[in-house]
Length: 352
Image (tube, rainbow, N blue to C red; front, side, top):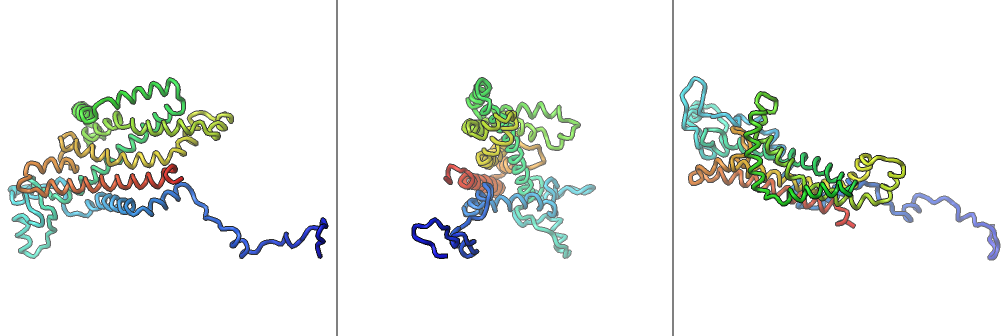
């Protein structure tokens, strides 16, 4: 039907459905995604953070699964056999050296697994002790960070949401803890708790874990949550004024529900970044406490205790100090670089 210039007739050609080719040409749709998927995509594009993540995963998998297949135990003294004389040739072996008993077995045609890093002064395989010490240090760092996350997130959320006197009291407690000298307080608390807990834990399930590790967790719970709580508090102070929080108030939602369902999920970027950066701090704290003799209970090794034990023979066997020091440095550096990558990937302010 021909349309007149000044007529009121509708042009029906304008209402013909668009073809798929027309839609593809006119509308360039981006695939649906989420905040987490976008953050992971940005993280994987960061080569330094990706390499650090691969290193951490490899070290973690090796420390967990390798002791299951290794022929030597971390606490087994190779020169001490039941009903036989002590063989001192197993003490202080250099890398890939063998004791006298092992050399005889090799001469007889028996395959003997080598000591890659040699043995320590007690005749224990040093490689498996380094691997097991890495497992202990990573476990302490991970669980200590979880403790700090739970306490810091809870206290920071309460202070930021309720404000007023509650916020004032909590922040003054945080200021007091911040004013204390960290190193001195950690050493004093670890020393006191180690003696106190040894009698309390006797005969319980936690006795196998050891009083020193339990005291480490208590030290982290008492001192290291303040930074996390301040970050969460600052985030929630800005989020609680948003419209969706006011709408939840108007609908009659309780404060605890608003914190769980709205405020903490919208602070997840700060939580992820802070937790990732807290793990190397916890590992370093455990390492220097173990170096001072306040860490894990013997004969259980950690990287710090291995470095401390290596000081006795540093002139003759310097590799015993170098190896755990390199592992500590590699883990802490990788975790710090990964934390920086997570901050760049998940912080919305840096991607706006």
